[in-house]
Image 1 (cartoon, rainbow, N blue to C red):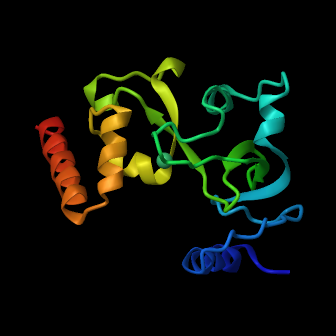
Image 2: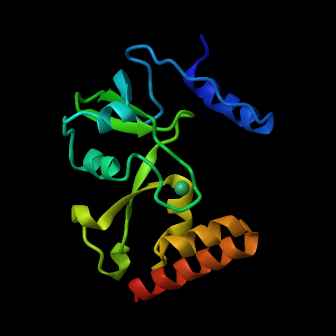
Image 3: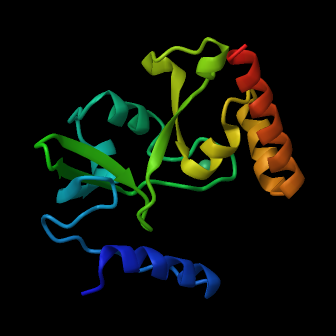
Length: 171
Ligand SMILES: [Zn+2]
């Protein structure tokens, strides 16, 4: 049985070989890669979408977006909803993609620009897209454009702009 961390490493090889990573089967109490959390059980996100169970506020936001990254052309989808227990007893749900990457919540209007923590101001976004968006007040189409460029200088420009924003914020 392959270990979780070595599995994650093997995924990079799959990409280089253009192979689909295998479905990782967790056993109860396995670490899931989120600090302190261990595996209890899981269901597919399709099952979540087809059931009436409401898990919590976060999961409802992901459900609204069908567990997909909202950036046009990204294609990231979280397919596994993993239930896990923290060592302090807390139980949480984590939506992972097939290759065990977490989907994140993005503030539609960045907090920097007065965006709130209301449910309506959140959308599902993969980590890669969310990192590139950062605090930028841009539309999904503009973000999609930036990501497709994938040029070093674009990323540098984005970082520069974020630093500029931080300076504004911190006076
Ligand atoms: Zn994405």
